[in-house]
Image (cartoon, rainbow, N blue to C red):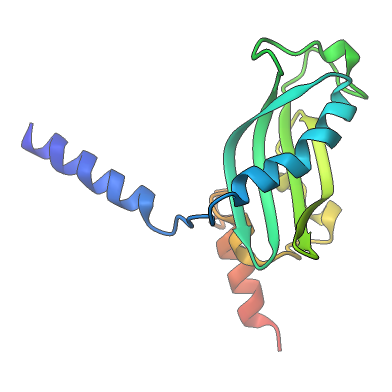
Length: 154
């Protein structure tokens, strides 16, 4: 029992490391920037389920999903280009310009994580902190890969 308690305490501490607290209202500003575009693509009013929100250097990456505004399942038949039988991940890249968040990339029904294919965005081109916790594999997280890449640049 003592080991379990220690393990849980250690896990909770590690999960908190590196977590960035957003200024009050910033998370809401990001969601408010995404919602109209996501609703338009989905063909219906939506709510955003956030699995991960990373912000660094005026850029943000959100990974999550969509639910209908009522909180029930989505009618994916109304959405633009979404296959109703495949997984649907929400992937959004935003940039803060002029004090407002602006959506740069939006995929409401990614069947595979878009961060598996960063070459479609030109590689690891955004501030490294936005990749935190994404794409853990044999080479580590994308954040780690980004930081290694940045150290190799002249």
